[in-house]
Image (cartoon, rainbow, N blue to C red; front, side):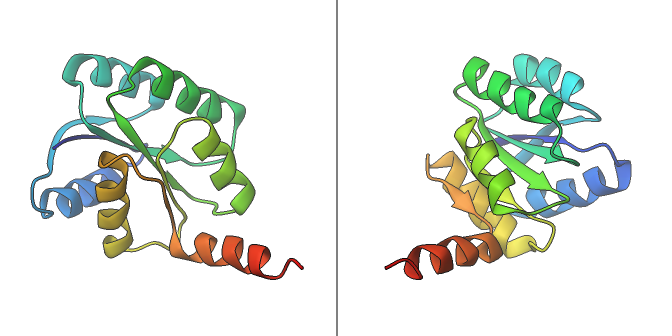
Length: 140
């Protein structure tokens, strides 16, 4: 599977690349510094997966998720966020992302998220899944 990484920090991009390329069957074909560059590189490389940074829950980042998911339906979007809230996770997933990873996630969660996304499933980081289920189970 071909993967694009979008991350503003060069050090974080390099770390993600190392983690992803250590996973069987995954190859990073492009790295973007911002969402604008990600659009260009997704159009060029047509990766099956795109790992996108959502540094803050800004309208611009959320709009980009909507545009990317509508334009490049063959590319599964996996969102990494510096803030992990159920509200933000719901918003990104409703806009077409297939996975949402909060700041507490590790390598195993990243791998699970990538696998789920490429198979057409939805993945929510374990901490947020727990919060969601707790809320559901507490209802009468």
